Length: 99
Image 1 (spheres, rainbow, N blue to C red):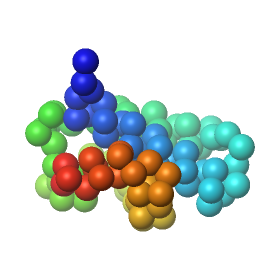
Image 2: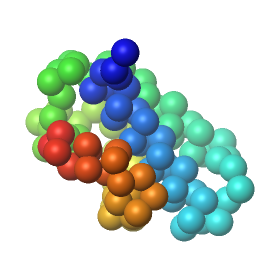
Image 3: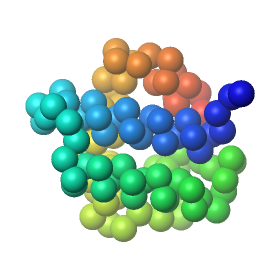
């Protein structure tokens, strides 16, 4: 059974956070700050009013993240996004095509 768009979005966010923590910050595993950010992003995706028709977050007319969380996830996506093509090319291409 294929995953829903929301499930795929969660997977991509998780991969980006992990990539950022491991490759940029040199962590062996996620600390509480990044685990909380991951859980927060899952809650936001679960509550997205657009559901399966959700636009890319940066194009969304409703910014559902709190400002500090939004800035943190933006920083992670800016760094991890271009690198996803190396570490998970299928997820990266699927993410690009879904925009």
